[in-house]
Image 1 (cartoon, rainbow, N blue to C red):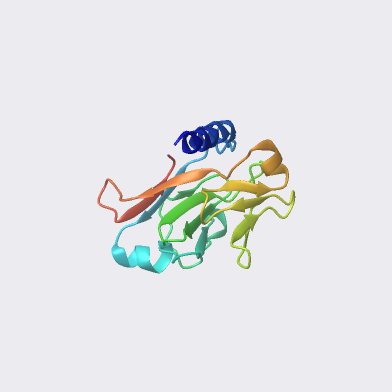
Image 2 (cartoon, rainbow, N blue to C red):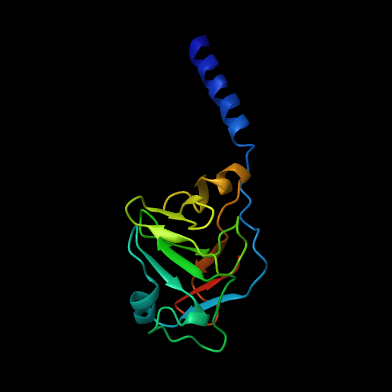
Length: 165
């Protein structure tokens, strides 16, 4: 019994030291975020990525081309990356690299590794399982994660909406 207690105590101490490292996922300049999906059909057509799939929204470039942006639509600082996690639950991130801090330096998705990466600084991020945490590169060294956005039911009758937290 004493041996089990020592093992558990060691595990708790080890976890307490590793949990002190925090991720800064709020580095980007404030920018408005609002994408409305008014019906289930809209959500299924434009905003419902399956597990390990993604959709990109950049209002200024009309991406996706067939999405009906409204006057109140806003896509954050660098755009929105909407992914379906391993269970198919939606998660949204800003496309701007938190290291580069530029609207036009956007992360890309590596579908073979199921990660996102910055083509400029080379940082890699876990977008499907670990909520935008840095995996390698300068972002991992500095503890910079991807900016996350809220995805959920709309308050004004929309089926789903993406907004700032």
